[in-house]
Image 1 (cartoon, rainbow, N blue to C red):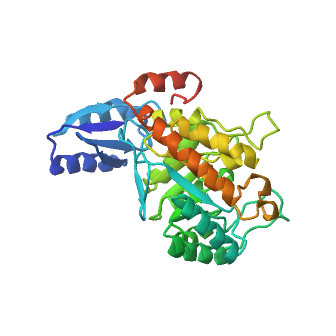
Image 2 (tube, helix red, strand yellow):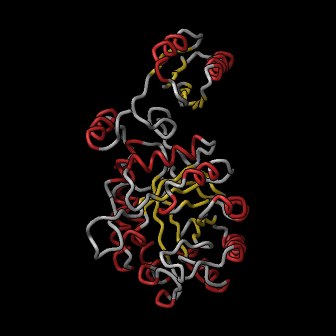
Length: 361
């Protein structure tokens, strides 16, 4: 449930409500919106719901208490109506600008990373990506350089000024990756690794959460809820393609997920056409499509010599192809940015999803 405080409610009244919630063995999360404070009540309420609504509603400074039937709490628009904007060094994600995350699938060497970093920075990228620990389908494929790659990424950040994002694969890696990286990425294979989600929720670094191959929108958002409820509100969602019956592309990019997520949540949404398609010649049109439907940014893989890459050779762009992509995406974003984010009938949007999407609990 959500406790909506009156516009005139003071700090003492807000603290009084939070204390009452804690006294019930529940956890309060407050969000100070433009007009008023909303407090989310998290925990098992069960049969005491009606009684609790009555008692919280009678406290000083409380305007209304709203029961929530959907499982989403802290990631929902009801709790946090304004878009979340996440600042990382000099870059802001989700503020209406276009975020471009670019770099090699795997950090293969210092020279390879620096050549790529210099090129993508010059072309206008805002965040440098690079794999240090690589989850591979085959145990015999390149697994990444590990901590050595993290050190190279930190050097590349100093060299270019770009924040860096890299994947963390397991709980034991969280601290070391957070020491070097500016954004921690949770990959598609780990989207429902709940112990990992809780651990990245406890570090002071933004987290980009990739949608799993077979995950629904609800499952993606509930995974994000694990991170936010663990104390980290700075979560970025990434649509990177889902598994369907189609085999020609690596995955099927769900462009409808972008505006749908913007209806349901305040978190920024990024698209990854490299992993969605698996083919470099399809990356550009899918990147354009993602920007056109309102994505806050695009993540693409770039390599100086893609055909010689140790991983994902077929989907990585050349440096020239990335420059061409950047020249195209800017005008598209400028053209559509005013078409997205206008006030919508969110209640109608949420209701329509409830029929076949978000379940009622």
